[in-house]
Image (cartoon, rainbow, N blue to C red; front, side, top):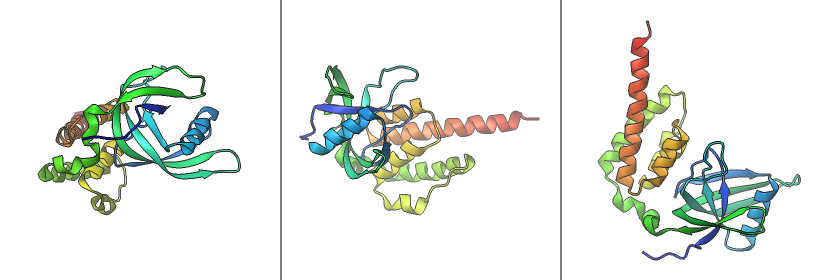
Length: 208
């Protein structure tokens, strides 16, 4: 499958934010370097990469997600509000030295070219099982989710949305982002949910 995504992209590294294809990410931009990044994107193709920073370092993970700015609003105080729509994951090849305020990377999409056609690769029975367990998991953690609205999304969007907002660690979300197939992603997310559920039940049973 061919694509016309740029291989040199501006990157917005953000700790604790994992962003998936077919999801929407609202962002409030106020740092000068990222205001510059957004303004430059709006002058060209509106495309930028989101990637997670590693804890307490300037390093980033190898896999992130390319997004397109679909909403743009500049406030009087200089802040920019945007919505970013996830398109395709990428793997970093190398960082490109520049004189800009923000970082740019050379990236490769080869492993993730099916990201725009994910629904053909999903086992429906598995996603039904996942959503059933996710509901209980979210409820136990006090998280409210409009499940009726979630059900209106296509299956890939449902899985990626659950992966994005689940009350799990950033490292676990990064693992989900890097998982190639949707069936494997369902499997990994189920294992994570079951681990937390087992751990919570174990702790409850040991309290005297």
